[in-house]
Length: 124
Image 1 (tube, helix red, strand yellow):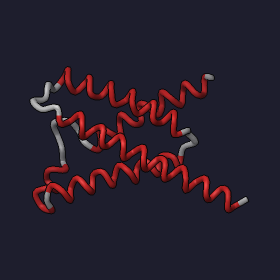
Image 2 (image 1 turned 180 degrees about the vertical axis):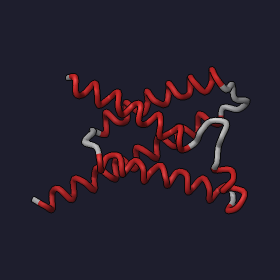
Image 3 (image 1 turned 60 degrees about the vertical axis):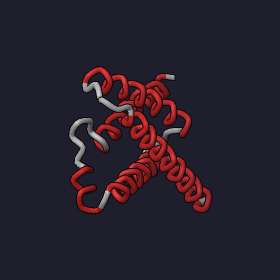
Image 4 (image 1 turned 45 degrees about the vertical axis):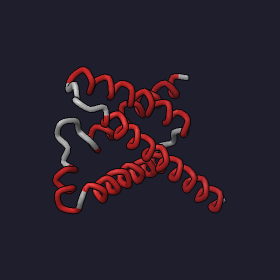
């Protein structure tokens, strides 16, 4: 039971940090890239990056997708509460952006888990 709680705490903190690093509130470096290649391509790159990170997380860590999804929901709620309290954004679009990042992380995690299961099955 303790190891499951520890996995929950670690994955919640990890997903919170990943979300913060991918889209730091108030200091978004992706806009510099958007000026060069356009907003649509930049968003595609951002969400693709989140998906790849999700696949890497499940490839490296032995964590269930259910626990990762629950941890992600908690990290999302805490992050949105902190953004609302500290930055007070003028638009709620950040709610959708971080939800999209979380969804892409979880899709990537599912892909990584399926790949790891396939490799384990073919190896045995």
